[in-house]
View 1 (cartoon, rainbow, N blue to C red):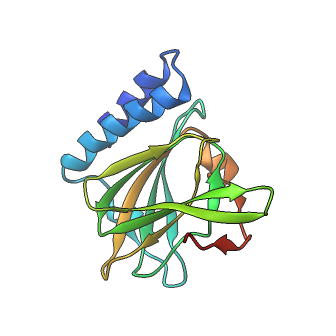
View 2: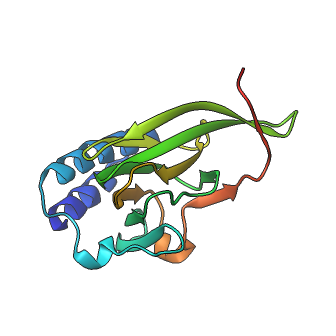
Length: 172
C-alpha cells in the first residue's frame, strides 16, 4: 500500500485533468490488486447493519483518499452521485454496479446498465458525466473493494454528492 500511495502522490504532482487522473489511478490500482497482501485486517471488518467504509489513507495535501468498503452479502449503497472522480477495484467477493440517468423533466431515474465486478477488476467514474449509480454485494460471501477518491474523505466524511430517492422508470 505504501508504494501505491507514493505512486498516487507522484501522479498528483502532474498537471492533468480528472479523467486522465482517474484512468492513471485505475492502472495503478490494478497493479496493487495483483500484488497480494493489500489491506490490514482492520480495514476489512464488516458491519452487520450496512456496508462499512474504512479510511485507509488521506493525502497530506487533501488531493486524494484511499478507502476500503466492506460489504456483507446483500448490502448496498443508496442510489447516489459523487463529489469527485472515483476509482474502484474489487479485492474480494463480487460487486454489482447499477447505473442510472436522471431524467430531470420527468423527475425519475432511468437504469442505463449493470456491471458485475470480480476480484482484480477496476472501474472508474468522473462526475458529472453519468456518475449516478448504486453498488451492492451480489455474492454470497464478504466483498471488499478499494476506492480512490479525488477528495479529502476524512474532511468530507463521504464521497457522496447526492442521494437519489426518485422512482426508477422501468426500461421497456
